[in-house]
Image (tube, rainbow, N blue to C red):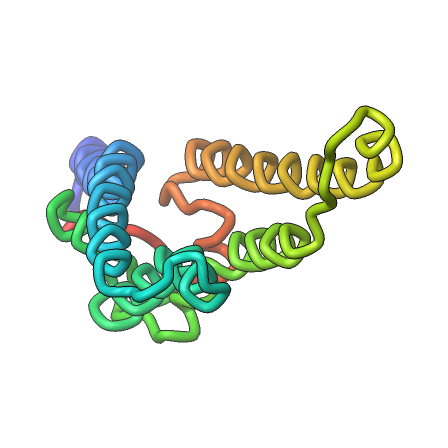
Length: 183
């Protein structure tokens, strides 16, 4: 028969292992930083080969390139290049197996909606030459401010949520039924 002290020590080790496995906040931050550098470099290379970077299609492609990269890499292997270097991986939260492309898409869905709204609004940006022009189009600027504030609230909620649960899952992890683990 095992003593209660032995079980207590065993439970402590299990809890410590769980803590280490899901302690990914700084690794995710590092991965994001690496991915931003990679995406900027990739965008620069694309701009070298695009005949007209002011073309609406080129601008739209470059705007959504981070999402194409994120969804493609996460759907393929659960890791972006940054996550590979930081030694973390996105897995299914139920069984910690590989995620699907649909789950990868769901992880980025809210930022995609926010960015799409801002891109659509940018096509309708009024020409402002005088203070009167600005006053005439104040509803446009209010909508853009609301969209920007909504995006900011989303990103803050991502960090706050990640800090206050055992598995360090962000809101997008809950939406997509995913969890980030150490590899």
